[in-house]
Length: 394
Image 1: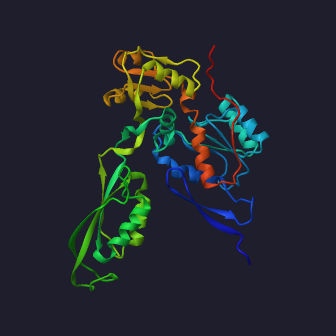
Image 2: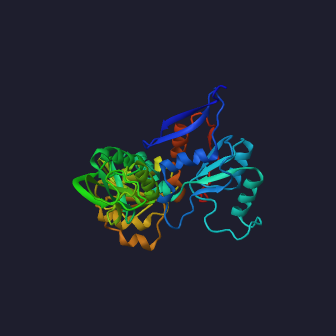
Image 3: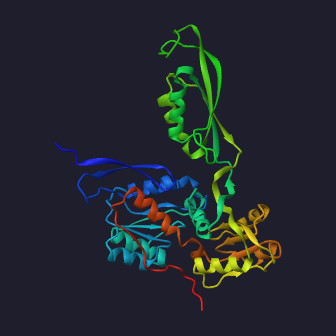
């Protein structure tokens, strides 16, 4: 019988590999909601979200086949109506529709009405929120790209999110175990991958009754030349890495240690900072931002009478990272929201610009489109025609 499907491999915009199943015949696809979710989570893993968040699948069944995907920043009733009218059974949003727990669904408020309408029309809703904010190449990197920043790096890296693994391996098997660890997600430090430290030594052990030792004899002390492999991994990958380690290691009982690290995770975190190619006058920078982000009313602290070269930013409500921006020597800090009294801390010290929550994150939909179309080029992909911005300007 002829095989009806092919295993397809594609590279996502962040360089990660996505594997999926596709029917062999042209224009017929077999893509499920869980496949779209997996591609998005390869780009922005859910464990990267902040503790208060609720990213991921909001509504729907993961095994349902995708008829069409509608992209948006926020989910509201007009967006769901648009999905229904255009035959899309999956909505991908940046802001989660369900942010706080729902005790009942009676149609009281727009969130409950959206949930009812989505369920009754077979529409799934998936959200990538702070995990996309914190991910390399995510929301803040897209803002930096729009501004033309260079040498872009994380403004406030995550802490307490990394582990160190030390494992002892027979010398002849060190390469195979090391490669298995790298494939499982170990060894990434900044822009470097496959990072490890290796020390030659020897181990001793005595196998007891009932053991089936890889080397040595039951009941006799054995001495084996070994390599200690040290590498790092994100804490959320621990289970996957241990599974890969046990599968690749030749010993019946491998010896390994896992330690929490206090190191900052430099490639993941809040906000970004970078430099403009050349110093620019303050007013020229502000005017450029207003135009590029279609800002109805750009608010800013007092001008300082100096050129702007180093720019820090955080999309959405990012005022809490302004202190990190000033400490990093930023000439300008750009964000979507800031409270009146917060600005007194920076007035006369660093130029702060507030462009609006929606305006700062509006290009999130471009990221969704790139990730999904790279993995599934034949999936019907639409961007909402509705502006979900609740703020309007005279």
